Length: 273
Image (cartoon, rainbow, N blue to C red):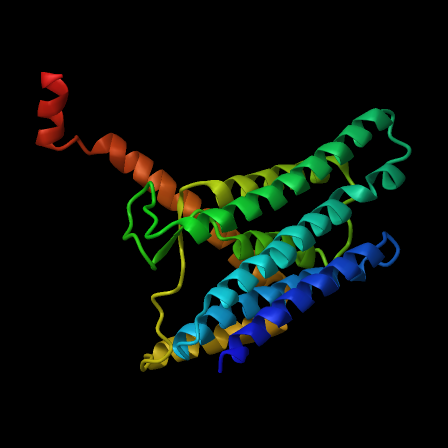
């Protein structure tokens, strides 16, 4: 039973390695490799979610499994999407925009794209390191601490956003400078959300060992069917919705903090000081 969670972690690593190989083979003429890499990262997100749940359900969690899972996440959700983000969004810009009047601007955009992709990798690795050493993290905005929320966007979600964007386009590479600039800003935003202290729903309070309401079963069935038949649009919407959920909770906390007066004890302490 201890081998079972590690098998899913191994599948996670295999998907990440396959994604890297597909990115290396991707070109403007054969951009389907980029879509294959995005799909592989999507399957890796599924494997990553299953290995932890299976380990908890079978009570086979171990220090080895946790360390292996962290190393796998760096490869699959750090290196692979970082390479995919740069190769799909920036690597082919000099050839595609060769007739542009200012090629220096394109070269700078490619360089900034490489920096942003590396920033994504470092943010993801830092997010994993913080998660491994933190006990009962406290979000900096309202919400119950513990299992219900992540502090900062988890790295699989960040990689999922990159993969969902590429898959939404079918792997067709970016061919305009303004689209590349938007892609650059999105990578930076996802990197920041991973190292932030904003809260994101973890889905860990869903216990699959207990009886589930019939409506929830129907909902999951419809979701899986929608992903199966309309994966590009559905995964694109899910990825954006999850990213903006953290932004929504943060803004809600900011406005609530402005509108709600501080408690009396806090006001008295401020006046006495």
